[in-house]
Length: 178
Image 1 (cartoon, rainbow, N blue to C red):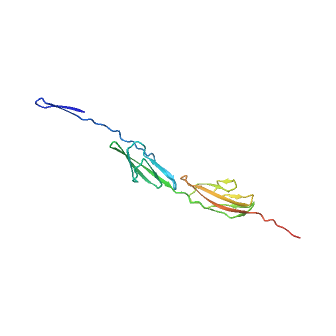
Image 2: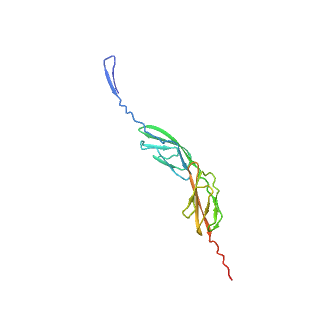
Image 3: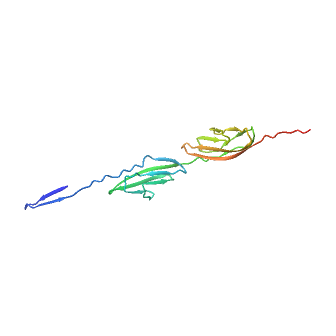
């Protein structure tokens, strides 16, 4: 801008000022997020700033979070600040457990699912077979030791698993002597 001033005596003075209008930085942390306990979520404030200040005290473009909460970032560029926030929720994993009794070859094993908070299940019986039933029965055709695993997934789509070993015994052969 330029201004010219003339006083009553006809004297003229001139002054100029230059105004630089800076574009504010852009920050968008996106929609609120859900993850499973044990996972890590990366929050990214974007590359459009000179400085970053997170509610955690971190001063980097990205941060990794592992606990539920509301995370706020203020970004600055050319003297202009912008702020955004995102809520992150970490959902619980279902506590997975099951029970069974060892059996003999060709005997049926009743697997008792003791998981709480599961909405779907995947059993791996250690012999190449699987089941999605909550409490399946299984017959092993061959004696041996098998590693059985159960993966339970919560309604929040958070999976957890556990494994146990089952012993399948040979069928005894009766022998008569004369």
